[in-house]
Length: 219
Ligand SMILES: [Zn+2]
Ligand SMILES: [Zn+2]
Image (cartoon, rainbow, N blue to C red; front, top):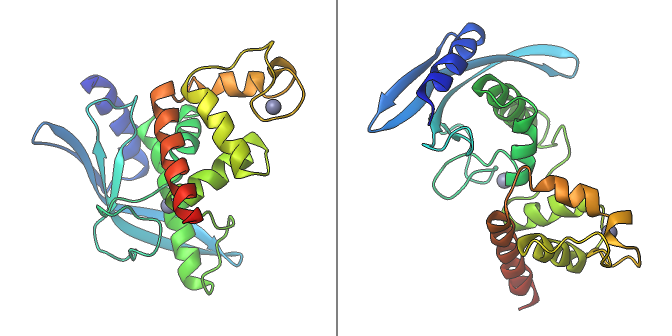
């Protein structure tokens, strides 16, 4: 981890969110404190505040921070992992969003606040999601990939993920989406672009996870 990058990025966080404090504990950096923001509910701006913690992995900014909400206001049924950390979105979606503004402030503004906003909205408006609901875990991942690849079946998602996981995206071969087109005239450019955000190992992980989920569904 580049310590200087962390401190420089933290300074801009502090300008926007003075209650967030950077600390170094047990070999890791944490940013902790009250995150204040204004959200619009039914055209009415409302102030929201959550006590949160960001844990920066040693590989930051290559890996993204892990986020916790410290007052247990967000129930387990909402997007949370078993260890209590927040599920801010499908991993690839998060990486793509983060790559547009790869800073701690960008991470807070583009990933944490939309998540918290979405939760507040969900609580206030009879549990309707402002941006449409995305299911959790494997199901959510599959839905995300279906939309990203613009395909309509789980088989096709799996097939494309498999090809991504073995890095077999070749322009002259038939496209893994199952169209009769060559890859270069179909998903080629789009799929190759994804390697900027995620490597074969991570696609393999997503593929295995989705496959296990689908097998479980069939049982
Ligand atoms: Zn989730
Ligand atoms: Zn295709």
